[in-house]
Image (cartoon, rainbow, N blue to C red; front, side):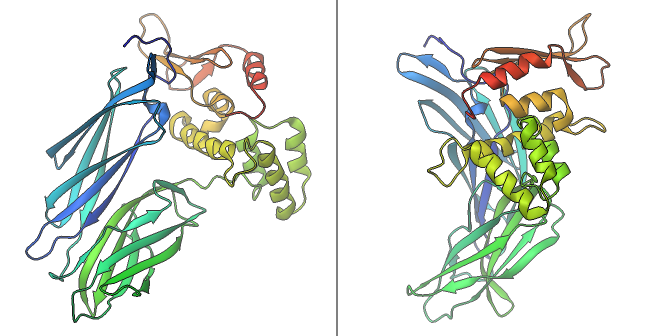
Length: 384
């Protein structure tokens, strides 16, 4: 295969994985399903006669053992790519899963670890599926999720009560309640509940569901939940919203938000703001808004320095305007030079150099802002 065009960044930006477990009993062991999601920006796509191709490898261990490997070559595939890994014969308690994603085209690799839990069930004759979350993946802290879970009831047994708990990394319970039960199908009970996430801090959480007969847990399951920042891009706090949208807003739009009266007026102004940028108004989703929220996540995570928010740095502003660069070249230890980074964009063509002049991780743009503004304004109107 002869590469003819590079389409994605050479630097892995991070993948995500979630998990769902089934419990261990007095004479049985538990299991866990690990779902790895790979975004398009994480793989180097190259062009060949058969189309654009990505080639990657996923390896995973649990407690440093139980090595699993998946490798795949996908041509013109849809993203995100999902891979399922299953670990069996696990004792109850906590375990550490380590997942490594390697791009076999560029050689870049990134590793993540997550603590998973295998619950204990007292019902040896009971069984269940794994609890599922909708939507899966990461969810904003101003949204909600739906839990769904099915339990298979042994003959002569009554329908158990269903309960859930949401725990943070410190295993403190931050949400709890009862599950609604549907027993319309004989031998199976379907549990579900909607759980609001308002007020949660961003981070990793664990949902545990349990079927209870008195004080006994006869079936249970756990799964992970990733919560993202609930960015105020609707004008609830006008100063905060303006700071977040300033890189992509016109002066007129900022003044309009500033002049808006109460929260209702500000929400209306911002609704118009995002509607103007919706590339496909016929659908429920606003792809530009969804993408911009992900940009804010990345900006906060990677470009924040001591005392300066990521959105107020040169890299943060350009990332908000232009998104992920097609190529990132990092030169942290060039002899005789200050650390610097080069970002290349293909459409429109733009090369930006950032220099860490003082050696403290605060990178400043070398080029003038007029170069960036011309590139931003020359893009197809509100295209992603």
